[in-house]
Length: 296
Image 1 (cartoon, rainbow, N blue to C red):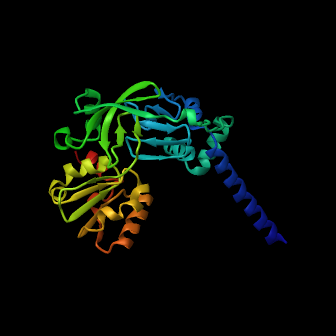
Image 2 (cartoon, rainbow, N blue to C red):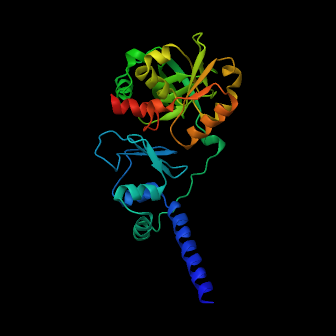
Image 3 (tube, one colour):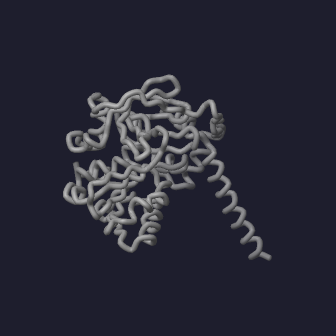
């Protein structure tokens, strides 16, 4: 009987801890940050941008998704939920974080904003030109991308969204849609698709995003000169590129060093015996751009 009681207490303790973690994840990150003295410098329906709570900076690089209640720090390339954030901010253990949150943010529960068909943001491309705006050149500089090296692959795209005008660095896909990036936005215009750049080579290199592709042009120029390129623009297109890559003699995989990248790399290697994992070229970094920023 004594042993049964011990097991019951242990199970109850584990359950309470799990419920505390679940409750902590329902706390609103934006409101919790405000309670801790961090306020957004820019806010939209979907996102809130902050000066990073991890370091001193003058340009906001810390984003919170108001729809998902998740954070991402572009300066360090890391993100997660509220527990991850407080652990990192205070060098706390999970248990210390739960105790801290219980005393600081017990009333800030997260409620996802309702999304209706009318709220869907339609992007209208107004004009496309060579990159000249200082803000975009500065943004490329923060990513250590030399415009003179990659100018033929990217454009300055001016677009309208919800009757407001914006501009961004644009990378076009095979369906003439655009991947759009600037210091505050990560968007895409319809239709969404992968980008296949052909130069008549027998080797193709597959990248996850276009900044990885641009970074490889700078870090691995000889390797890139001898290859065609496939930029997925989303891992969801990994199952849709078979007809494009099946004729290549060698398939080089340069996806991210993370769980999703591992999964897609293994998937493509299972489909093609000639597919080679080339991520050792940026081992120790999440992606190629992270390595470029560290080395530049």
